[in-house]
Length: 366
Image 1 (tube, rainbow, N blue to C red):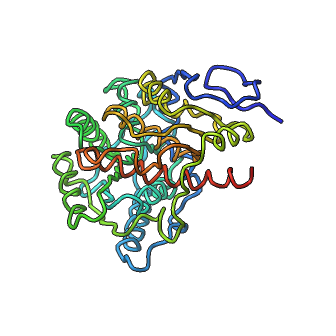
Image 2 (cartoon, rainbow, N blue to C red):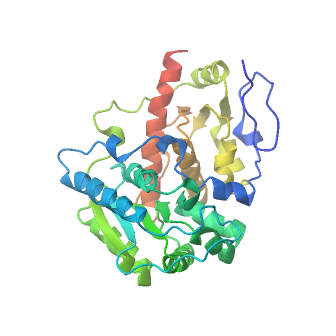
Image 3 (spheres, rainbow, N blue to C red):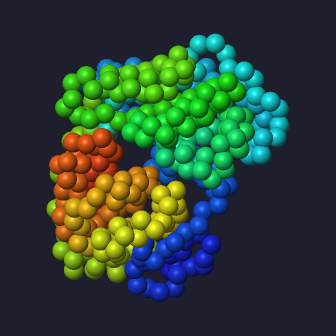
């Protein structure tokens, strides 16, 4: 039996005991941040053909049609140098043609926006080095690691930049990314973005599109907004999320599952405060299941936002989460769920619930 992988930069772990996220302090070089700007493992194999539109939501079928045409149009565009221009070498990119050079997918969480965005990335006829895919947070992390000008040079030779979960709740980051996108549009890079709206809020999806276009100001003319209606597919026709397990059950599964981690929830939250969110992906390297004991409500907003990022990275990597304590829909207070970051919290609940459902298989087959 092969040993589970340790964090980047260290050797295999030979201790048969469960791993611990709290024991990991990964260091991620800037070039890894660039190389990892591709659809995450969960979306490696998705395509437009694997997206299953809800027959009751014609906007989903229409979105597929429009995005397929958008990808085909990019195939005729000039793509610059055939190699990733990490240090800005190669031919200068051509100026952007007139007309929309971007699409914005507007809709609630769980309607398949990331599936569609990743399908657009896969369908665009260009080698992977000329296409970039990342979340808004990952893009700001890249700017932090490379610097603004180097990030512009790095991405200017690309044919397409896909930004998942575009955030509108941090004015500073929004201005930063808007300025970056302006530079990239001038260089001829096509753009695609998504963000979330809440369920049960009539018209809020429209307002989200208006907010997005207003925040990116001068770039709004370059985006076509695509409305995608529907309910959260993660709960469509699926059983309810399993209830939390006991501490003993969680510990037993952690010891019986190769590559599983086992951590108490409160110490893990404290550890996340010491690890930059850009390294949460590396924090989960080689982890095949996350086992948590003593899940409780998060104590404050900063902690909650860090947990959201971890939930996103676990969901991207399809890492099941088995937990004891409170169910995941009780992680965030009513004040948080009604506040400015509510979209992130609802997304985290949805994704952790899906991962808890996946983890139920581990407990069943133990």
